[in-house]
Length: 379
Image: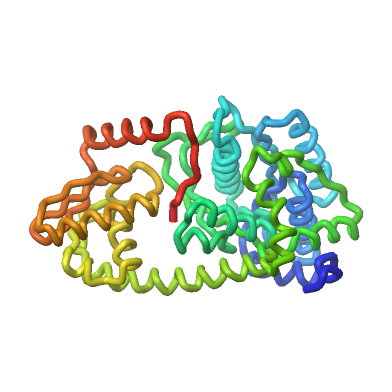
């Protein structure tokens, strides 16, 4: 697509195609920060819904993280615009203390949980966000820099499940740790559109938007990557090429996952419940392609453990240690992500680690990470 086409406003027909799959939902939550992308999403969804006799009830939600003095004013501006478009609006606030490091990552996690809780309260099965083609390209670069595997390099999918978990919120959607998780679908309908087209759409509709200076703050990774994009595009590695890479990797990911499904039925004993313990046939596991074997092992660890995401590098190291133990015919016991993995007699047992083992693992992790926060190589 040419630069001129990139600056073409999104037509009503295009928007109808983007949102058509959502027409049967009883309600939709639209995440609107007030920036150009989310403001364009709000305007496009409002125009689409207004053209239909029947369709979902719309709720625009702004999450005020309280990190900038302008944020409250921007939330009020979104509320005014939503009112002009005939859409109900809510502002949710991130209360409590803010972390000294990894602030953007924590803000993103809280934002998604607040949005999911708002969707549950509104009876909406979906939350719509305004991620664009440019965001997708930046995500690919970010995950390359962090050493992600195939799953991570697939970047963002059009739809993702957002479970509701315990969080600290203001308002009626407060939840507690231990509350039942309800799957809310995060939908990114604008993922194939460049940001320039959204800005052109707002210009054509006469709608203004807020400018968040943190999007240009070099202290954060994404703005630094954003600065590299023109130079990469000059070499042919533009946003569309990076997004194409992500789509192809997600296609390969689906193929590998199908192979893992089949392999797991052969290698693993059927567990009594989904949290294990799991027993794997070590010889059959070692006969699988390395990527498939890693994922079969990783699935068992993720289900038996309870200490958060499993990092690819650590899983690879454990897999190598298990192969070494098989060759040397020795017993091996390791903990990873809250799971205890034991190799003995040709079998690999994966079970929830006892409290003492998990406590030691947490202390070791804290010691290694003290004073630094690095990128993860999660899958």
